[in-house]
Length: 627
Image (cartoon, rainbow, N blue to C red; front, side, top):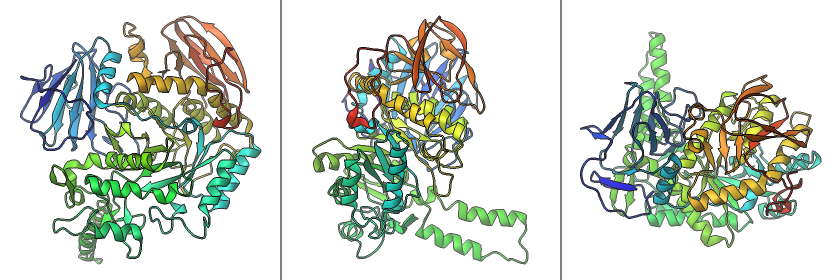
């Protein structure tokens, strides 16, 4: 059951697809206060949801902000990252879900200030609140998902393995990478192009020397079974003679300052402007720009920097320079130095800048600050709508920033993580929350985007990520190479990635069922075994589809771990490419998982396909034998 309560919303997110009548009275079991909503918790209350956030599957004990944030350091003290996902699921003396339909900031204090209370504080009280109840945790999620619409379903080839790196600068870099994967006999379906393929970092352009004939190159790669997936950033370079800028400026399609002039920011291209994705006409115009690349044979994209991420604004930089110039170098002390440093650091993604530019929407003119969480969502929708017109077949599309609603148009990846062991666990714990909010096609940068990956870290990360719908290895410029062939011994990586392809008939089928039935592909054990008190405490194991459970290793130098089986299951082990099985009873088990082995557990047999080179060779129908 869903009840809708109105607090005079000015503009909603567009996440909801069902038009429900408003209910009278208080949104019980919340208590409404002058500042927001409160709820008391007992000792056993668990709190789930909030999509892409830090910390555990159970969100109790921390404070979170729903605010799309360009945050490259994903540590436990962070309150927000790239997504703003306002669905929360409370399992205590009261069991219900709540969706706060607001495009601005919301703070969720879940036992942080007072360990026995939830306090939810919207910065702007103009919102719709939906209270969702059901017979089980899974039923509540399905009811909510039916409210917000079907999740994005990518093409089958998008479930293959992809390799990316900021630093593939030329065609030869990409070609060399493809050759090394082929020589190592490691399956590969996608190679990603980061910002270096562009001419001066300008969207929808191609560098004339580095990629002199992208159309021919894309055809060459596709002949080898590999698709090229370029990045598109949100900001457009301010440069006369650049057709995208000229047309957008002439037609008024960029966000404006208070005087009606294009708001100028600094991002990768230097001085840039921001498309107004909340203006339907501007959004459609930007989406049609993807034609410049689809005409060259490109079949998928990843949208980035769309929180939007701002290095600085033109006006903010001018003020900062004035502040720095006031400093008396002869008298500067330590505190003066740190204060000066902060003047420049605080330029990036500042609220003062977000308050200084505006959107034209069908509902009126709004300061970006008040509708901030919609920007990445609307960029994804802009691209999706256009790609449906421009191409006859489904396209791959995923984004960094998002809010609920974007799940209908593309997937997401969890952004600029690090080559830290803790980030394997973090990725695992983010997946159920994302699934609750409709984001099924999701994954993390395997091996970590920032930092220097090690061979053992990459092996363990891949041993988890082979189960995620989006399976992409991605790293930053200047970091150590972390391709599956980069560590000399390629055999172990070939076995792991080959297992992914052998499991694809099951993984894809379970993904499609989750889309069609508004269910979760990844689930905490508590959702399937509600009467099992131990299962409710498990934070490092997940159910995958109807018949699989995973429990990866995420600690350095560990070669075994304790695993809890909530019922009798079959342990499936991949060792040096060979599959073996063992029946295990319900309860705790200490399971040996040497580096390179992959272990998962099944409640019913899951057939494996044959080894293949890419998804074009996968037989998607279920097979009759276990191995």
